[in-house]
Length: 120
Image 1 (tube, rainbow, N blue to C red):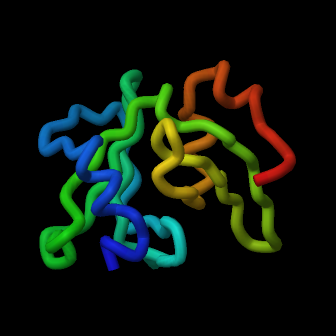
Image 2 (cartoon, one colour):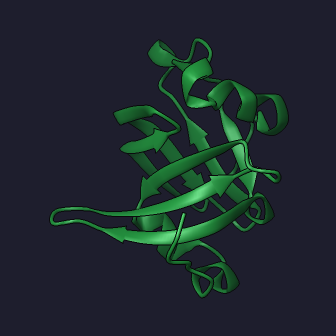
């Protein structure tokens, strides 16, 4: 799954075992590439960037990541009937396109929140 989703490619550049999060969201869902991670991703946020980690039971091939804010681009909001998500390209150049929980949008640096685009 890590290979199909792009997590392994992200890990080559953004692997980070230590991270001090200002805010954490556990057991959240995300989509990376073609893979939906349903209620298993832990997100952490601080001034430096976004952390994504899997529980130890699913960690094989999915080391913790810390993606700096300046490596997240092409950000757009996606509102559905019962969910709010943020779509973004991770990595420069883009490694993978992701759909993240909507609360991530409100914790991004202010200049990123104002640059939502309408197209992928």
